[in-house]
Amino acid sequence: MHITLRRPDDWHLHLRDGAMLQGIVPESARDFARAIIMPNLVPPVVTGADAAAYRDRIVAALPPGADFTPLMTLYLTEGTDPDDLAETARSGMITAVKLYPAGATTNSDSGVRDIEKVMPVLERMAEVGLPLCVHGEVTDPEVDIFDREAVFLETVLDPLRARLPELKVTLEHVTTSDGVDYVRGADTNLACTITTHHLIIDRNHMLVGGIRPHYYCLPIVKRAAHRTALRQAATSGDARFFLGTDSAPHVDAAKETGCGCAGVFSASNTMPLLAQVFEQEGALDQLEAFTSLNGPAWYGLAPNESQIVLEKKPGNFPARIETGAGPVTLFDPGFDIEWRVRR
Ligand SMILES: NC(=O)N[C@@H](CC(=O)O)C(=O)O
Ligand SMILES: [Zn+2]
Ligand SMILES: [Zn+2]
Image (cartoon, rainbow, N blue to C red):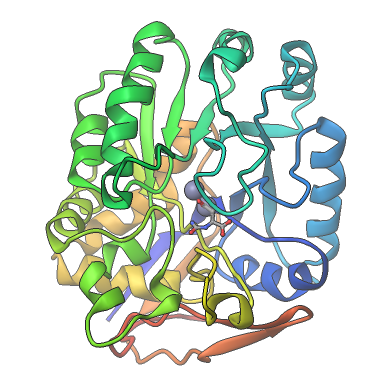
C-alpha cells in the first residue's frame, strides 16, 4: 500500500544555530519543502537583519540539491518597533512574528511580560496582514503547568482577539481539547498547529514506569482525552488545523539531567508517524490536507507542486543523530514504525 501527497511543510520548527544547525537542517529538508523557523535563538532573532543572517546560515547548512525554503519569523519583544517591523514585512523577509510570554518556554526570557506594551506593534501587524504565532501558555507560577494553555486562552488570547479581531493569529502547538474547541469556535483569523508527538503520547507515556526526559516538552503532554481531541481535529479535514512539528532538538546531555530542557526532536520521522496515526484513525485521505494544504492556505501561499510517496513498509530510524554540538535523540513513538517515505 502507498499514498501520494503533495510535499509537506512544517509550520513550526526549531533548527537552532551554531554547531547544531548543520546536523539538524538536513533532517527537515529530506521530507519538507518549507518550514516556519522559530526565532528563539540566544540571542533571539529580533530584526530583519538578524532574520536575513539566520536564513543565510540555514541555507548554507542545506545538503547539495536540497529543495527547502526557510520561512523566517521575528521574535516579538517589548522593544519591537512597529515601523521597523512593517518595513521588514514589506521586504518579504518574514512570514510571521512570534509571541513568547516571557519565561514560558526554552529561550523565552526576552519575550513579552506586558501585552499592553506590544499593542502598537500588534495593531500595525493587523493593518499589514502579518500573522502572529503564539506560544499559548501563561507563566503565572500559581497556575498549574497542565492548565497553562487553557488559562492562556481565557485570560490572554480571547481578550486580545476581542480587542483586535483583524489580527491573524496562529495558536502554536495546541495540546488540549480546550484549545481545539477554542479554535473551532472562532469565525475568522484563528488557526492552529498540532505537533506529531502530541498526537501520539499522553502524560502517562512520559511519567508511568519511570520519567522519560525525551517526552518532556512545552506545552507539556496532557491526559489521554486531550490527545483524542487533537487526533479528531487533525484528521477532521477542518482547514484551521495543520502540522507544526515543533521539532525542538536539544543535545542528550541537556535532556538527560537533573533539570532537563523542554523539546522533542521529531523532524526525521514525522511523516511516517503521521501516516500511521492517520491510518489508525481511518483518515489517510485527510493526511494531505493536514500536512500539505491547510498550512499554505492559511499563510496565503500555494501548496507545493512536487510530491512524496509514503509506503506501508517498516521504516528504520536511528535512536539518535550526531550533530556538531553532540548527539540528539529522535522521538521514539513507543511502537514499530510501519510506514516510510519512498526515496
Ligand atoms: N516545545 C518545546 O518544548 N521547546 C521549544 C520551545 C517551544 O516551542 O515552546 C524549544 O525551543 O526547545
Ligand atoms: Zn512554544
Ligand atoms: Zn516550538
